[in-house]
Image (cartoon, rainbow, N blue to C red; front, side, top):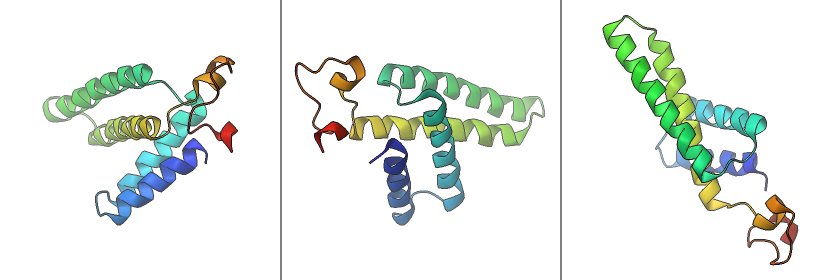
Length: 118
């Protein structure tokens, strides 16, 4: 299963549980797909830094909308960026990368979830 397929399944499960509006879930998944297409599967440290950055951008958009008549759509855009990164963290935790494949070092074998085991 690819990263994108796993993200799609996670979104579908969230929709079925009533935890996410279809519009929001679709926006989160679309952005996560764009992130994966652009950057590939990132490690937790990189995702954490990106989440920190996006949190700041979301806060800035909220304050600008409140105090400076900023664009309220920017709040939505920043929230989508942040949520997509959070989805990527969940995907990483559910399907950790294979160190052997990442490093071209196969002495210890592939990780439990590595597609090479299929």
